[in-house]
Image (cartoon, rainbow, N blue to C red; front, side, top):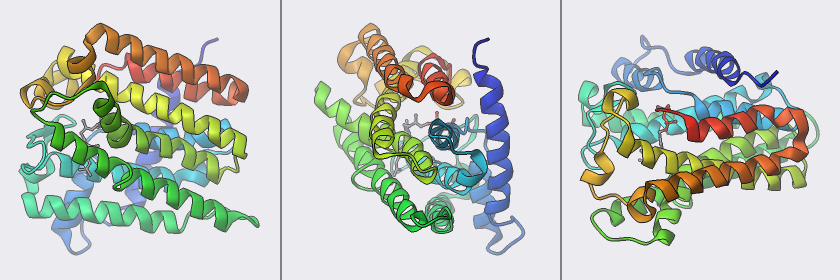
Length: 298
Ligand code: GRG
């Protein structure tokens, strides 16, 4: 029987939602507006792909969901902060995200900025408490903090976002698009898988393999995102379609064309799935998530 990814994702996303509900400050706790804004975007209906990848990364090396749940939630908070800030008028200036009005449309720009700041900070507060037991628990926690901080900061997502902004309206080459995609998107996806595997005690060899798998899957995810921006509708995406072309963004289809972009994304997933072979049945979820990255419709 083939692996039931929909059931796997639904079950884990449900557990992540429940944990996020506990980790986020209550709406009734002051400052209420800020906490409402944080919860508004976190619970706006995301796929929970990155927290599921933290869990799947842990499972690939024999770990389990409960032990990595705070880390999984931290990664989702960092992702949500990036979306809130990306949607601001100073950046992508979007009115819709996850099918609802963007955070600044509901709460105003100042609160949206601060909700993003508070989510990023809370994520690291959660990570601080995530050390696994055992003699090397402290080292594993250190390695996870380094992975996630590097992936989220100027060496990762923020750096990629800057390159993205600076490339708008310019004719850029394949190397620049690869830089943007590997930093803006793939870095956090790679770090999600690796963080789960580090906490679960993956060996050096396993972590190197998963690092490459994460990079390939992250790049395939963003290439697919670029393709969907051209081929899907606003209703399907829950955000404005066709914006990349309108804003003259550096994308895979713009540089390579749609067909070459599709085959590059498929090639990356195949490469990742080969590398996952050595993990056996434990990596079935990661393999299936790879296929999902390129077959998703939103
Ligand atoms: C503002 C620091 C900063 C960074 C922004 C992540 C990002 C960088 C911008 C968001 C816009 C964008 C197109 C990002 C690429 C990554 C991406 C496709 C995000 C959407 O991720 P999904 O599809 O979203 O997992 P859901 O809503 O399902 O969580």
